[in-house]
Image 1: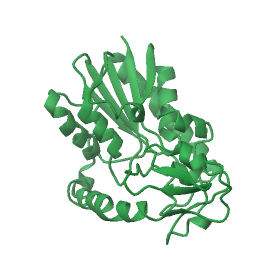
Image 2: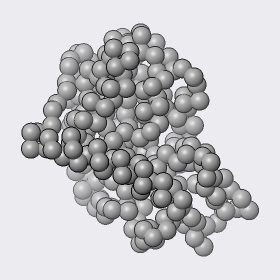
Image 3: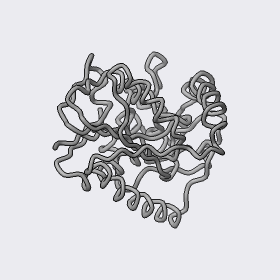
Amino acid sequence: MRTEIYYFSGTGNSLHVSRELQKRLPNSSLTPIMSLLKKEKITSNAEKVGIVFPIHALTFPWPVKDFLQKIDLESTSYLFAVATRECFATVFSKMDGLLANQNRSLDAYLSFEMPTNYVLLFDLYSQEKIDAVESKMLEKLDSFAQVINSGETFRPKDHPVYFGLSHAIYPILTYWFHRRRFPKMERSFYADSNCNGCGTCEQVCLSNKIKLVDKKPVWQENVKCTYCFACLHYCPTHAIQIKGKNTVNRGRYHHPDISAKDILDQK
């Protein structure tokens, strides 16, 4: 039985997890979501299909939404998802809503913590914490791979204490992020004087929003940002900044096993 793992990854966590999951699933392959989005319709012939993604503003990124709206799952008998940031079960319920037009829903899903790249709000993890998170993630993947290989249903629910957060506060915050914070932030990227014109930001930009003009990056207003922060974190001189967010002093993170080339190869 063939398994196809579709992934979206900005700074490497989700690609790393996808690779680790692939090791645990016989006859499986990886396909980047961004490489498919220009198609009118996406077709998978795999019997099992998985989606691995980060969490943006408490939900899945818009490329994952577009992917779910385009993929034809007629040949698929088992569907699973992995979020590389702990999240509410309502995130996966929202995915079920997009799959409902094919009379489908997720058979299994899992979320867990990975090192954050959202340095606008959070401090970078220490190496000790990164190692601990990695070890725990691998343990969870071992168990989840057994679930997938055996075709089990695994749909954990949120603890009742979080019901109000997940069903009331979560939708409001997600709406605010996507309608107010993200659009404003999208217009706030710039390169400071450390920029050497190497073009890494342009290469890793998954939506091709960044173009070099006179050896300086320009964020095109007519191209939608994926909010993945690949440009911020893969810049070798830490020249990419966000106005008003003190990113100069916030540090940078991308998964150590995932190169800039690995990110651009998604396109």
